[in-house]
Length: 367
Ligand SMILES: Cc1cc2nc3c(=O)[nH]c(=O)nc-3n(C[C@H](O)[C@H](O)[C@H](O)COP(=O)(O)OP(=O)(O)OC[C@H]3O[C@@H](n4cnc5c(N)ncnc54)[C@H](O)[C@@H]3O)c2cc1C
Image 1 (spheres, rainbow, N blue to C red):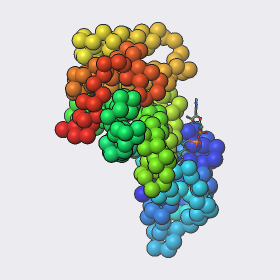
Image 2 (cartoon, rainbow, N blue to C red):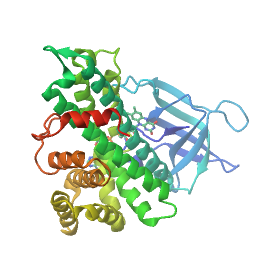
Image 3 (tube, protein in one colour):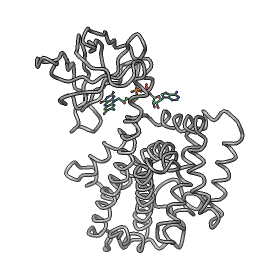
């Protein structure tokens, strides 16, 4: 099943879509209009957005029409993309294309929001998973490559880089699993549902921001070989930015976090309560969490600070998850470097005294 929503003038702003849907006598519709991005155009069916008299509406578009004949679905061009090449993305045109309405007339965006929540969750898991793949490649290379007479994995500065990547991955994984648990329990636990509402978007934003820099650093661990196509890292590196763009680009996601807070303040309260339970034992988490609560209470218009707020919320959440579930040393180092101001802006800047080697070894076999 593909999705055909984005138009030239309407990507983030789907309300700007102009494709039209005309009702026909059997309750179905005929669509006409152009879509600027439509991935997996070989799919048997699509969800598409088009405008009826009531507004933007969601439609089910099969490749074969109800009488079995082929439904008009013109593939105008395949995109030549930066990465993500094994997923074809096309520009398509509907011209009298048979479709059936899904959900309420004029409420197409709301109909798709539930799906977007799930695909954003997929992206969170993918970001943590691809970090793991890249980390393993970097650890493996460092364990075997000798430079200046010693293996890279035995050299302190490379150990700092690898340990830093390992902590970033661990915090990403814990966050992805925490959001997964919220999805699992959402039906029977309202607090988890509220937590998932905010944590999915916030995690999607932050893990997608960390993913490209993570891939670039892992690639650098392999030196020149990392930049060559025979190794998997070049592909992971090219793939990394797309997750930050589709299903809501960075700003759009952070504005969605603000919207979630405004519409249902109990969503951010659920996340903050969870952070505060751990903050009692850690002044750095307590201070960040109090700072977030203060900006939320200030009543100021936070639009321009939406990224800052989201980033801080995720870091506080990751720190609390590390404190709960990670080895105490991993939690201490992560919190010192990411919250306590004792790390730098690049990977490989963990504070002095960090047991790099032990962190790397744990990353090899985390169980
Ligand atoms: C590989 C790939 C596959 C895709 N597949 C599909 C598909 O199958 N179906 C489909 O429908 N779409 C698909 N898309 C489209 C994708 O969902 C959109 O590109 C994405 O939603 C962004 O929309 P846009 O390109 O129109 O960018 P714009 O909406 O023009 O956004 C440009 C930038 O402005 C920022 N921005 C937007 N609004 C605001 C604001 N209010 N304040 C501050 N900043 C803002 C955005 O965050 C972004 O950084 C695909 C895209 C890619 C790259």
